[in-house]
Structure formats: structure tokens, C-alpha cells
Length: 110
Image (tube, rainbow, N blue to C red):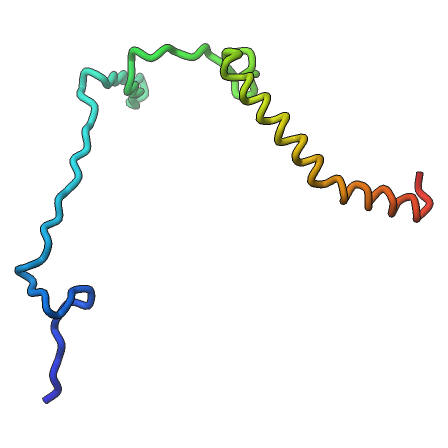
């Protein structure tokens, strides 16, 4: 009869199943019920707030201007980064723009 290897494919042959390393489960900390606020709505749903002490944002529509809500210490770095990215983008496509303009000039377009 043929000999059948019955060991696990990812387990070394010299390691017996009794000698397997014990796996320790990670413990996750869940917020206590004091930190969670659950409000039941009329239609049977629920609104959950994980930090009821957090300040509420003013009611805004989907297309509202966030610059009117955020502080300058948040807006300044965002504006600086956007300006820098735009200037880098314009510089990176400078060769393409020059080639495009020269091509239009050679074709006789003004």
C-alpha cells in the first residue's frame, strides 16, 4: 500500500500537534455604556452617539461651504498644501503646454 502523509501542510513534520504554539487573543476595549448615547427614533430606528460630550456641528446642507465653519488654524495648512500642489502640477505639465502651443502655432491657429 501507498504511504499517506497525514501531517498538516503548514506544520513542520518534526513538530507534533501537542507542541503547537498557543495563540493569545487580542483584547479589545469597548466603550462603556456611559460613553454611548442611544436615542430611539419614531420609525423604530436608533441614533447612536459614541461621544455625547462632543460639540455638535451646526446643521448644514450637503453643498454647504466648510470654510465658513472651520477655524483658520485648520484652513491655513489646507490652503497652503492645495496651492503648493497646484503649482507643482502646473510646473510638471509645462513641457506639454509648450508643445501644445507650438503645435497650434505650426498649424496656423492663433
